[in-house]
Image 1 (cartoon, rainbow, N blue to C red):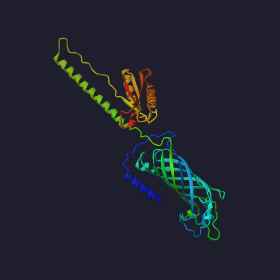
Image 2: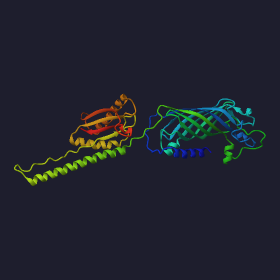
Image 3: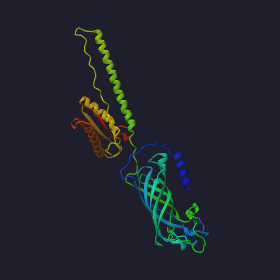
Image 4: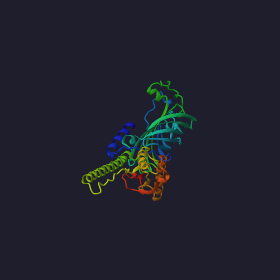
Length: 395
């Protein structure tokens, strides 16, 4: 039922949201994309000791239903689609935990807590593409952990799965609906033996029905809140190939100009040779120096490490032209003026220019032949992330 609801939610999301272009995102630092959660809910309990009785299996019966239950969690998203969460569930009150011994709810009361490590899969981002403005994210998960029943002084390993529906109220805050199903060994709820008087033995655990009947289990539904610690979004990786295409267009234009100049040079040479003169034909001036187009090297937001080593290939080509003509090179660093203060962007543009200058030195250009300029934050290119770059030109 839960998976069917998730499928409907994803289909509805795809129909109601504007189409989102899928794109690669830059990996954030370890301290980014952390979150904490707090939840309150209710839990329905079933135990292996019930084999052979006629207790109602409905999760809504008072003798099965424990409330309120509480949970807190801390987690991190490593990509927009994959994360980890450590979650502590607690049924700290007699009325919130249950060990099913009869249909008398007062006889079933117990207290317990469970710690679980869970892997999260944000299928909204996986299937529909990352969108930081999306309201609803659908997040299935699976995990393992252990349970402590304090009333009966027992421990048990557990494993389970669930689905988290997360509705964003802002970049920092979201509301949660969390549904999870957990299974544990027979001392999960504190009682390991079949209840007396049933006259039955445990079911064959090799069957599907027997596996569940011979294990303790519970179903929990929670409402809560998520708070994102620090940065909660992901940057688009600069479209380096597209920008390289623009640079190649500039090179093609310069080559076309050079071809036109050579053609004009040949025309004048032929004209002078045909007309002659008292002092003889005038020797034409031939253009031999090739002017290299500027090369852009791109960076991720807030970073001074080159985003793609592929950018350095064009830098190498420009270096060869500079060496052949004994030219000086100017490196101008920029930042995106849409983010950060002017002071931060000025310092960031300096570090970006220095990073490219270091690469030029590694390629054989003398530091004395490199001029470094920090231009600060700019908004000359669209989208804004394309302004996070350093430009290399021949002076």
